[in-house]
Image 1 (tube, rainbow, N blue to C red):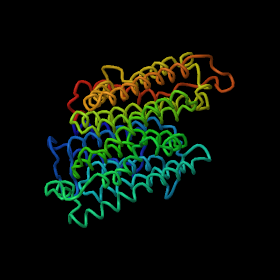
Image 2: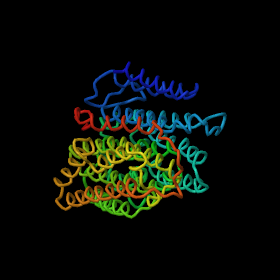
Image 3: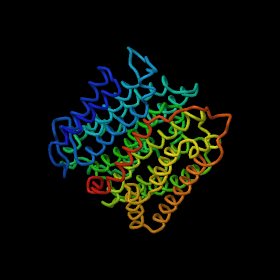
Image 4: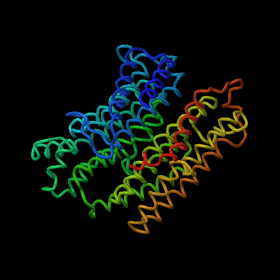
Length: 452
């Protein structure tokens, strides 16, 4: 499997015409994954002094590499035209590779100070990606919004980690868990303060204002990486924090659970009245992440497994929706849903792909999205029937806005004011869409890999 992975990545890199820096970064990331896959991960394993992995780490690293490859394939036009030069001749490819490498290291380090460093490191290339290759003047405001929200919420986390490091005398997650160093503290309010950074990164409703702005102003590769990889930092960070700090269920945790679930219902309602295509997909991401957070905070083992499965399935489905939105923008020159009409008349194949991923996004069987949502609602029902009812309502509203999205974009009469005759269909969107669809449908044949 390692040889096949290396060969596939090499072929994609060769097809993209990547230069030396991009080659070096991606080969390092893939080599790290190959090292991580050398032994079974039924439990947490220390591969070295700074590297510790388990099944969830390998799954998130694999997701990071897959989304990076899909983003580069879908952004071939930007990559080959060069949209060059940020600093020292770096292009979009190098920015994507830096984000990928930082994400791989974030998902695999075992020290919580390294964990925090790579958590913040990913913001730097993302900031430059939005600032340099965004499409509109508002990209500066979007990039600053992202920095203010994420960095500001990370300061309490840094102070808390330094405080616990001074008392436990180690920043190794596994060692601190084994010696029970966190049991000496009442983790209710400290957990909320430390989780604030992950809740904003996820993001939870109420601290989500930076996400639609960043998605709207980012280039295609930036939107795909934001939805597919960077949002997963919040879920992965919460799972790791709950694991090594051994926080228990409490009133504060239940408050965050209910607040997140209600925010997911509200964001699903906002999706139904959005006019901007990328904003609609961004708000749908907020709803799915709210479902994953709420079932994780149920403290059931099935809840944690469903949360990881939601993270993975959303990490594949949402970037493809952004890729299709970019395709719609290419021939309509507008992100407005009211102007982007009639795709089924112009490109029936793309219309079929739109339908396929809209029903996948709403949780159509037998995809991974379906199983993740079923287990999520089941975990909430096990905790409280009212919470399960809210989760079911969120899934129902997801189906409603996905149907609205498909019908408005694909049906109707094409406006002669926006459509340019003679525009050819680009195959690169179809390649990434077929690849993502195979992953989501084929994943049902090996569910034990995703319910970890």
